[in-house]
Image (cartoon, rainbow over all chains, first blue to last red):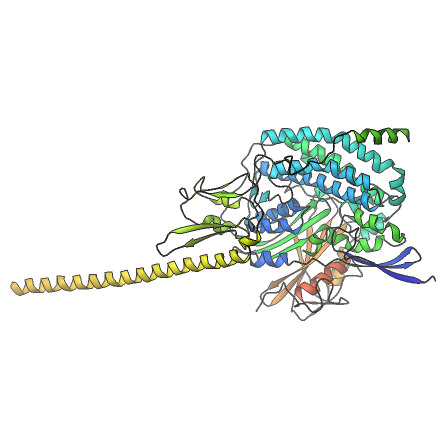
Length: 362
Length: 164
Length: 113
């Protein structure tokens, strides 16, 4: 047996966006074992939601769990609270929620792709992807009034309406974005330099993905067809607006890039369908009821399945709120997928997982 | 190879993508979620905005005459617009498209606000206690007056019966 | 949400009988305080269209030891390690110190008596 070395990466590292710690046991350059430690940013948000804030205010608190999938958290919480107070949301509110979730998916996926490019050593592609991402931030700002914290979903519906001129500008900007996306697709698919770092790196098989309960683009790149948009219909009508499952088979960094890029085409189509078929109903259902009983909600965030559990006790303050972020499900697989890879490709692999540690640790 | 070369040369003459921020304006939508405005003349002092505010950026203090004053901290506010939705009187509290200015050290925006918040709650409690005390005094005075009156009535009737 | 009650002794056999790798998907573990007992929950969902969430639950005393399901569902170690730290309960083969520092006040999500 060759001599083994232990090399840590994180919690502070130049290629990491968030505090995350991996300890690799390596033989020469090959990784044989990985230990993961993901809890560096525990903020006690679950406890704050069950003690300090009233249930209507919690939808603004959970938006602060994560910057990138802020709208997914607020929407999932709003849905679980609506189940507890037993109200049905108007259809226009549902459509607007889906619109913002998909716009958010565009900006989150492009951010992840740009970081994969950067960590693979392709700085120019990082700049290019970030340049093309800017339009989605501006559209989100026009729809929700802010670039990062949208505060769009509230218990009972949505906070703001979509103005006709904003809808028009979304359609126009998306039309401009499609050729740019084709260009990115071409680079990520065919660039030889990028393929050296991405093809075959961090691969995971479909069986492993199933065994380790992987979710999101990570699972879909391995060929496991898991997507909450495909599995639920009652809360948000995804099938109605043209959702389609995207899967790849190789399960490596390259496949994850391609899954993310192909999902952007689906997102664009969903957004266009939503704007063309926006129903004319009120935005919000008012109620004076207090939350009672328990309920669960699943929602597809950009990184995978988001799960909320809430229990009410007929007062303004919830009894218990449990948040399961997508990265939480992937931690076990994240540690395993490194095995057999070279230490040099670790930054690109970590970026391709798209880890969101502030979601995981809350 | 040659294609890349010409593209690189071409890029030299293209305009930059980034905006020179302080000299050029960046994109701000018309209904940007900016500072919260307040109109004292329209307010009906129901304090509903204070109740719904998630971070507690609005607080009302009260002096001994019962007059309330509105306090707002732009550094605590998350600009969600929940106060505007909760307001029963349209236009009393509203959201502008103006971004909030930076907080300065001299403003003492954290500790000063915490102190102000505690004082505001105290002032309201003090006013409520004072009001209760006054109400109790008034009730006692009323009771006394009522008892006196009754006595007078009684003596009057006594006098009458005595007269008869 | 479909709720199935189970006991500490029958928990592992119940979950082993239910859990099929190709059909189900383990999501998360959760614990809620109910009076002076703790309700521990295991959440599963299906891969199918219009699927339902299945929840196994059992009521325990805070000091009781809960069997680990790591040998049935491999990725459950993350959820178990989190719950041990945040709710201060005992799970087989799970050490403290994954979520919080070892010297941190244990069980921050438990209600203060």
